[in-house]
Image 1: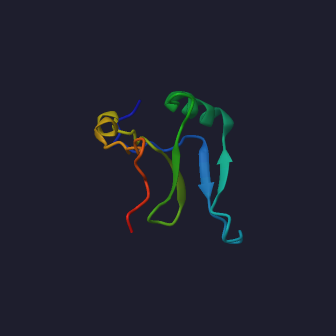
Image 2: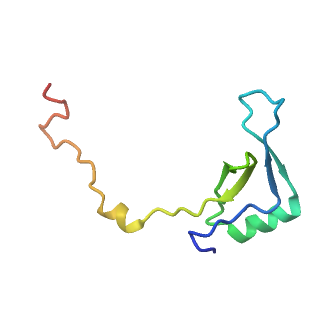
Image 3: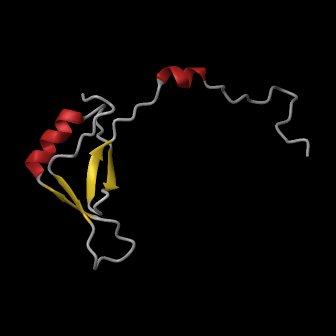
Length: 94
């Protein structure tokens, strides 16, 4: 797997915005199957590859590997929601 701070661009995947496309079409994706398969095989994590489609400063769209991982320790330290005990109400007093 790659360094989380290193940008990894999706190989075999091209994102384009067509000026004539309706506003609700964000971008079109083109897949070069052999290259994209290799990219997916290389970066799959539990059967998934997460990508972010971004817009460069020059206005072109591209796909970048999303390397964000939840911090397991932070999730364990997070306060857990309590459930009302018998006889208690979860209604707010106001």
